[in-house]
Amino acid sequence: MRVLVLGGDGYLGWPMALYLSRRGHEVGVVDNFARRGYDHEMGVDSLVPIASLQQRVRRWRAVSGYDLEVFVGDLTDAEFVTQTLQRFGPDAIVHFAEQRSAPYSMIDRRHAVYTQVNNVVGTLNLLYAIAEQDPSIHLVKLGTMGEYGTPNIDIEEGFIEITHKGRTDLLPYPKQPGSFYHLSKVHDSHNIMFACRIWGLRSTDLNQGIVYGQETEETVQHPELATRFDYDGVFGTVLNRFCVQAVVGHPLTVYGAGGQTRGMLDIRDTMACIELALEHPPAPGEYRVFNQFTESFSVQQLAEMVVDAYPGRATIEHVDPPRVEKEEHYYRAAHTKLLDLGLVPHLLEPATIHRMLALADRHRDRVDLAAIRPTIDWRRTQSQLPTAGT
Ligand code: NAD
Image (tube, rainbow, N blue to C red; front, side, top):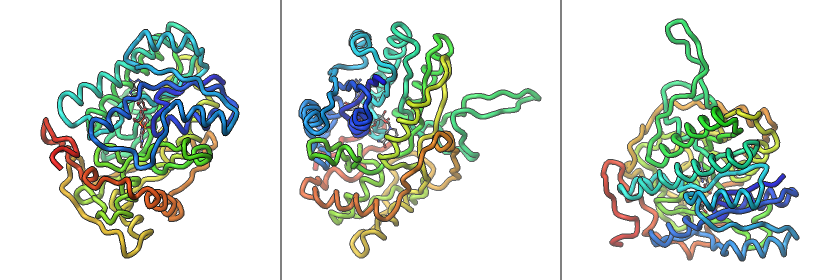
């Protein structure tokens, strides 16, 4: 299969490109290095040093013998998107290339507008390019479980059967996202569903949970193949951040009561889920949704798991919640479609947390303590950047 990985220089896109390449697919990588730019903007960096995309690609060729074709450009540039699709001629596209931090989107008006323009316009350009060039291309799009919010009923996989005044229909599940970033994903989902309906495109929208871990079979083959690992208050996702906090002796910052419950998955399962979606494409015109996570945990539970894995050294601190979200709530979300396709999950075990703690420990000298605490407050329309004034 010829697969174009959009956002292929990022945390998940880079290991995905290697994973597919190693399995014999022809892989193209697209990125505009926006993610590296956010690091410069906020004065933070990946905990694990990452090589440039060009170095990574050269190293992968030396290690594996496989080539990756690189396209440097911005998805909001429609001409670039069209030309890239014409040059590469993909059978499938895996789309990771969006601004993906909720706090970043909540800094101020400029960051909210940037996030929504980048994400929504990029995806819209892509939908047009696919429709004009080859509607049979399978678009695998990364969405988020955060699109649903935390309703007081079970969350279904994309659609819910509703009976209203005696009539019944299968309708898109109601969305109650919690940030302008999450809203951008909802807008994407609507645009993709509509494009499938009017142009007969085929797409899998993956409502992914929060990913943890950093190592895959491919990325551990050489330090220049490593993917990024974020621990800061803006881009660091919860379990990755807790592991870094533990090894540097910083209290694990649980926001509020810590009852916020979310779907989670191991980075290796992100690879496996997307491979399953690619191997089992939807029919022409079909828009389908998979909830891509393997287990649910509350933030407090995750913190306690890290404390147990690092006994006597890690402590928990409940900080004022920067987000506007329920601190205790009902949470039960369906996630059977990927299991039905054959997913065998890596569940979160102490050994996984020990590996993440060891990784954090190897790079502890690179930790910037000033970048860890949350500084972006949902209730304000303007917040200071994390390292400003420290
Ligand atoms: P990331 O920021 O590390 O990677 C995204 C990549 O896309 C970056 O390399 C960035 O430079 C690139 N990019 C952004 N805008 C672009 C544009 N306009 N044109 C070209 N390239 C662009 O993010 P990630 O953690 O790898 O997440 C990838 C995707 O998965 C995102 O869409 C995110 O919303 C989704 N997701 C991630 C998680 C998680 O826990 N990391 C959870 C749920 C969903």
